[in-house]
Length: 116
Image (cartoon, rainbow, N blue to C red):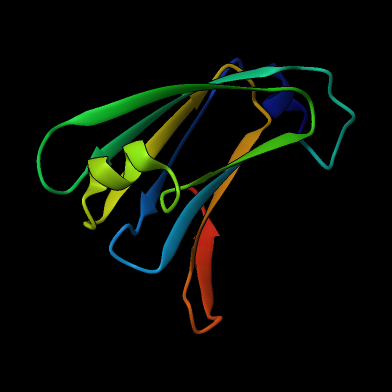
């Protein structure tokens, strides 16, 4: 879609099921349609179900790079969510930012979907 190349930003949101197994969010700066050269600066905001508090992070991804944020193993996020579900938003200055969320259970079951 040529119109998407003219976009100057992308907004995505995804649930983070911090009350389940091993939740993660995968953020990508890539496009299968073209060989793009744009670096993406992404403002990630985390929100929790417990109250109105939020936590902010900035991620910079080069073309075709990805970042994986895992709640488990990230002390700040583990404490922030406190074992309760939440969600995150991503605002990027690139039209090529996309995201997926997953939950991995100890039994080997993996569930997930694309960010919205």
